[in-house]
Image 1 (cartoon, rainbow, N blue to C red):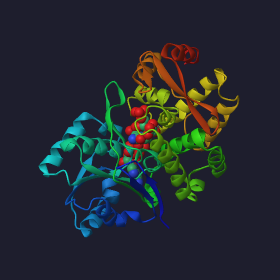
Image 2 (cartoon, rainbow, N blue to C red):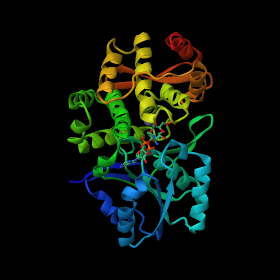
Image 3 (tube, helix red, strand yellow):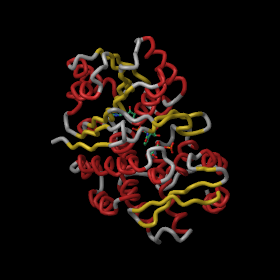
Image 4 (cartoon, rainbow, N blue to C red):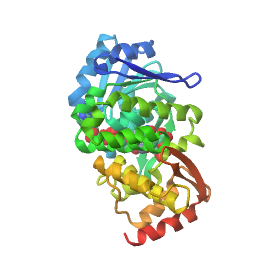
Length: 361
Ligand SMILES: NC(=O)c1ccc[n+]([C@@H]2O[C@H](COP(=O)([O-])OP(=O)(O)OC[C@H]3O[C@@H](n4cnc5c(N)ncnc54)[C@H](O)[C@@H]3O)[C@@H](O)[C@H]2O)c1
Ligand SMILES: O=C(O)C(=O)C[C@@H](O)[C@H](O)[C@H](O)COP(=O)(O)O
Ligand SMILES: [Zn+2]
């Protein structure tokens, strides 16, 4: 049975559809939201392409589209200006027009990269998200943040560009490695931490991949619904949306420290949530014992609770966080498990609190 959530942004409303087997019906779904499009430029990666692209192309062609497939190497390193430029050039070589569209078929890397290409080529063409990792199905395909990484750090060039539709087929998760499944669980656990204590407790009880897969539609629906509501209140990330960044200030530093190879985004976020919660406890905002509860659940899902990171890298990443405003920063902390808030503080005060934790590193 299909579950549908609507991201009801004025003039830019779109549906998130969650349904087993949806991959074979994306053609008709794309036709419904892109009625004038002739060509669809499908972006995928070198792992997802051989697994799922043909089914998507067949479905698109059956719905009357001319579909062109473009494959980037799998991995975070593809979220770069070189791959973006290749996409722009290939889109123009395909004579894409403003009434055509882009389809992102893959994980968060493909979604962020293809979404940014769609946001910028011809000053913006429509795009569709077909997320294939757990992380992309519960988080990155929704809300319109699209970006590439720069040498300085994560997601430093990008846009807010909402998709025309998000088509989620949970069956594709079956081919994920355990590590990539766990990455998605970091963001899933984040949703429990920031907005839904009961959901957090369920995740703790399910205890692993097979338990979660028994409830996968509920998991995807719960996370997308939280994100949808937050994005509706603050699309441009000026206040409430920042809670979706829980664990990311320090998490992005961990990713940078591993040169985006050693540590994935999900792993960075997992360990970053522990640090943010420890700080919250130290500041007297987060109840004592909360970090322990988060560490316990992260361990259940094979996620790290700490990651080595040089102090200078941490300082660098904190300085580049998009929640900075002048010399202040908003750190996302938990008022309690299930409720996150942006906590404004001087960036130097945050670094001063972090420093003693790093001394032993
Ligand atoms: N825009 C947002 O709101 C947002 C939110 C969260 C994360 N992100 C970004 O998302 C990225 C991480 O996304 P990710 O974890 O999906 O990583 P990813 O896109 O690199 O995918 C992880 C790996 O899984 C493979 N894969 C994808 N689908 C598969 C499938 N069904 N079966 C087998 N293998 C499959 C990929 O080829 C890749 O090797 C980061 O760059 C992060 O910054 C963005
Ligand atoms: O959608 C959001 O807003 C988020 O913060 C979701 C995060 O999980 C995601 O990693 C996002 O890309 C981080 O954005 P950034 O603004 O910190 O680059
Ligand atoms: Zn994230």
